[in-house]
Length: 292
Ligand SMILES: C[S@@+](CC[C@H](N)C(=O)[O-])C[C@H]1O[C@@H](n2cnc3c(N)ncnc32)[C@H](O)[C@@H]1O
Image (tube, rainbow, N blue to C red):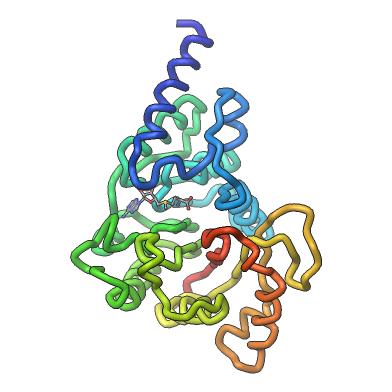
């Protein structure tokens, strides 16, 4: 088989696995290095949701903090592998574990890992619930992006029946996750199972919601190192040319727990003008924590 035939065959297989009509299909795009080589892209409307800008922010943070490039990374709920494929490509000496419950999507990642010779990337094609967290192994850095609010829907349906069950469950979960990684990059939807009729917090204010979520981390033994939002402005209110994730200042992080600094937190988040986003996704903060 010549290279062109092989590539066309791979593209056909990827297209079938990607659009499998499951709950989380058509969610992520392809990393640029793959899209360019295969001349294939799955277009996700960046006004509503973006993965490249989240990756850019995570890599910026990793570089600023001197996170080692040969560390052990885990991408929990990897979907079609945008983050795990990108990390394995960007850091060839790293160990990257992609955990994905949807077998079609796990196969999708596997095919790309093989085609692009990403030897540091392993795939675990299983749904992992709270009681199986210890089976994922130890990691230096763990991405847990937009999975936890699906507890009770995609997994652990015996433990989360409704929003009332969620806070205690989430704290147990964060407490257990602490044993599997040193650093956590976390993002979560504000509605249980993505259902607007099931808001996890009764408050609608972004600062109030963030403060409650932050208290869960601190109560379960995490230190919050960074909080960032997708915005068209800087935290001082000045316009950026493109949508980007911007961190709040250290003073604003202190304002999560100390009333003296609450004004800085409120002002910075107001300057981000989150209400301008058409949907809820970009109002979800990216939170980076370290085990205390
Ligand atoms: C909403 S998507 C988020 C994807 C990705 N983390 C992101 O933020 O772009 C959630 C993904 O996690 C997977 N998932 C949900 N629960 C899981 C579990 N318990 N174990 C492994 N994967 C899970 C789903 O199949 C889906 O691909």
